[in-house]
View 1: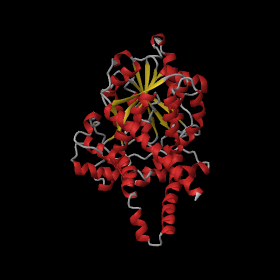
View 2: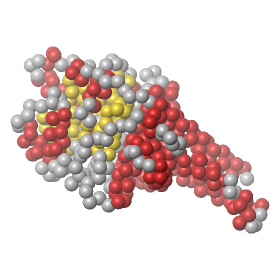
View 3: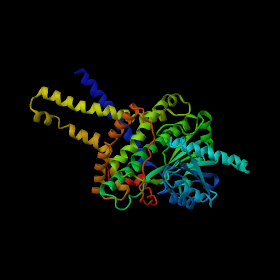
View 4: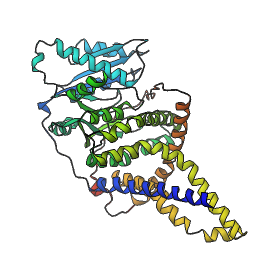
Length: 454
């Protein structure tokens, strides 16, 4: 009986901390206002595009970046591709002085995205040093953007980034991520899986980032991140390279950025879109890597806790975020045990199973309010962002609730990899016939729930 009491107390702590976090991210998200814009001409822009076997998308991506951001330089890192990626980029670079090919070869290649980005960082530094007008380059006013090979950065993104970097304390900023439409011929289930990933980034993850804007703990993502070159230098001065070895190298970079004294910002109105994965197997593989990378970053919590540069609120937010995989594991044990315990003690009081279930009917609305609504509300918000009607939005809410159980698979898979000592970086495969589309405009969150309460 005593053990069950402690189990219930643990379940209560898990539940209340989760619900509090949901409220903390939901309220600022719904209240946010459009962000300011700045003068992009006040900065020198360089894009890093890491590539491994990206022949299906790199040509079009290069053309799009050069057309949208004519003054920017594009540094494509070929990570020992086995296809025509390097040849495509080399052909463009031969006629365009703003396009640069950084080639990595085995055995030093294919060791992780962070290593590829470090190679581009060194190449850019060497290029600046060799420039006869090198003295004109102010590393505080040089901004490096990271865009995936399939990434579609909105043409106005630099305006929002420029506003963030106008604050000299800001070292990095992260765009909002969206998914572009699934290619023609995708199954209905594949399209739904795409929409659920889009919903995840446009609602839940966006809301987390909005909260982090208040706690000064914004995390960088793998696509659509911007870093001041001087901030990358500061990290490199302490640890040789700006990017490190975690499988979640983007979030790890933001941790190092804050630990050396720079601030990070979230650019909700600057959109970068990318391919979604359209099969459960590919999704689990991708998210397993992210989950494992987050677990690897737990080792920084002690540095975060004692850092004079990170706010107490930021420390709490990062601690909660990095502990979520372990909370998921704990919940997979605690909640079934609590359910079995309730049933067991109910049967001890009354051998009538139907009577026990009738007496426990109060649990159903509790489950609805605390176990379904916090997840389904994001799907409803997403439906309203897309302009769907109430019934379809509710359908997306229920689908998103079911989608929220997938992290249990990611966590188990990530723990297994950690126990096996597997830390290899597995790239997400591209859709060869995907056609990137212009990112959908962001709906102001204050209008998302007009006339509807999740």
